[in-house]
Structure formats: C-alpha cells, structure tokens
Length: 142
Image (cartoon, rainbow, N blue to C red; front, side, top):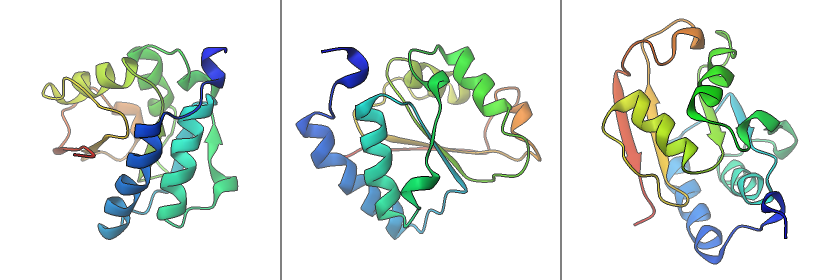
C-alpha cells in the first residue's frame, strides 16, 4: 500500500479523540486547520476538528505537509500572513518533531496524536522560527 494511503493505526484511532476532547475542554478554537493529504493525517485532523466544532469542509489539505522537511513546514507557516491567529498543522514524523525541536529547543519526540502547542508574541506568522515562542506545551495521549 502506498504510504499516503496508509490508514491511521489503532493507537491513533484511540488517542486522537482523547486529544481532541482535551483540546475542547481547554476551549481551543483554531482559525485554520492545515493537513497533509495522507489518509492517516487527514483522518486525525477530522477527528480533532469534530471535537473542536470546526467544520470538516474547512480543513485545508496541503501537499506541502506530506514528505516535507522542517524547513518546508516552516515556509508553509511563514506564508500564513497575519489573519489566522490559531493554526493547527497535521502532518508526519520525523518532520513535525524536527520542527517542534527547532521552534522550542526542548521537544525531542512527538508520539502519535501528540499536540505541541506554541504561543508567539508576533503580528505575523512570517517571523515564526526567528524568535523563540512565549510558551511551549507538549500534550501527549498518556
């Protein structure tokens, strides 16, 4: 089976709803959800979006989030401009772990369904990665 078509594994199917519920309890309200078009990433995005009352048809599939390096992911983020203030990315490891480590310096591993949350004191996404985040929180299913 091509990698892009691999489904979300059992652990992901179990943990994604749990993480979505945790985010919903914290009243997370994304302005934008971007997902890799790979089946498992998109499925995770859908599960989380439902828990956050985010319209599934508003999830943006972005080919650049599949098989992309941390620099590519950073470029996607930097192109967001200033309109969305809360953005969620759904993609793949090891690239997301590498990006999280680059942004935080502390995150070294993102397990399946983990959520790395970064807050920035910036007016635009264009400076992401140039300044350290004001806060970093790693939420894991366990």
